[in-house]
Image 1: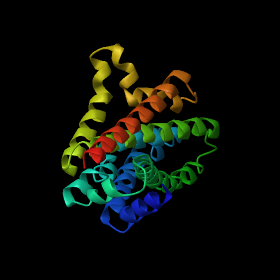
Image 2: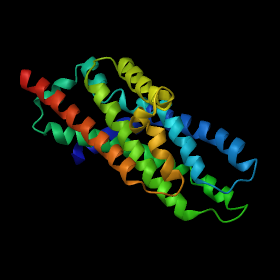
Image 3: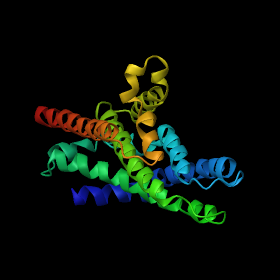
Length: 226
């Protein structure tokens, strides 16, 4: 798993993929931060992360679309199918590498915290719960993006599937409150309010595990057919 993790991190940072993701994320985050936090002089840094989560909905698939779809398109998936490494280790390695990129990107955004501190002392306890929720949300997003990438050989199709699913989840509660548990931004909102909700935490963790297991099953079946 560690070997896969290192390989994937090199792929992100030795190609434009990682820098495109980081650049887009920070550019849009900076605009939102200035408009809704810095300009009005608001101290609640947690809502910067809430807005960052909205940005993830649009661009997370940049990190995940090539995980397996790119390998199949380029024919390098044969290395995965014949590798002595376990499919589980490969899936987890790719999953963790994308999480590392997102966390590294968020670390850059802590410069906003220093700027906000100019106005006063931010609520660090609420920030702590927000960061926990952001990590859980990121895990859910990446796990689904990885699953989408495993079912197609076209990265752009994987991107569209991932983006469409999470974009739809933002508005699905408009149809009925019954869909609240698949509204990912809705699940995240309580963390931003300074709460670690049990039900929402279980929902995000369960979704992540389910997607990872499905990805492993799909790849294992494909490997067995080779």
